[in-house]
Image (cartoon, rainbow, N blue to C red; front, side):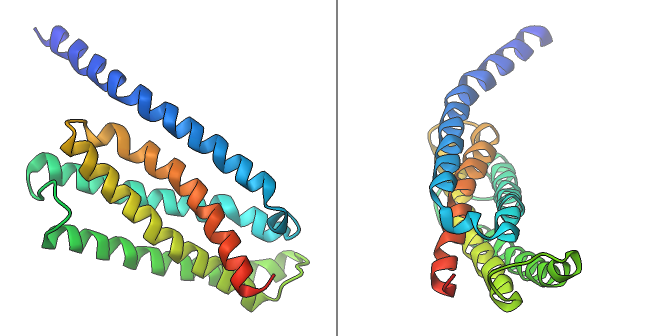
Length: 189
């Protein structure tokens, strides 16, 4: 009996995951194409180097929130509507963690870049502002994507555990590149 149940669970998980992973694959290709077109990033090696770090942290923040929301949806602690104090608390925690993490990353980058002797066409303050603000902006985007994908996948009868992480990480890669490009434009590089 347990073997049959295991097969059903595995089959259901694979059936739900394949379309999500295909969408994530397409989003990853799109992120690469956007980066390929963004020549303003390529001229600043340290910024190019920081893209995976910024995107990785954003993906981690989003998947942490997604996993927490998924557990709470399964347990019935939160409703599959976009409301409630528990949902607000989870989002506030994610935003706070994002701000602390990206501001810390900005300070570390401002210290590490000169120590490594990295030559940049921007000063260290602009580098710090770039990393902090693009990361904080990315936090808001990724947390929104995570929340929406968890709630809507649950509403449509899908297991959020199978969809939130790939959608959040892949969407976050695109959003991270776009946030860096946006902040580069605002900072004036």
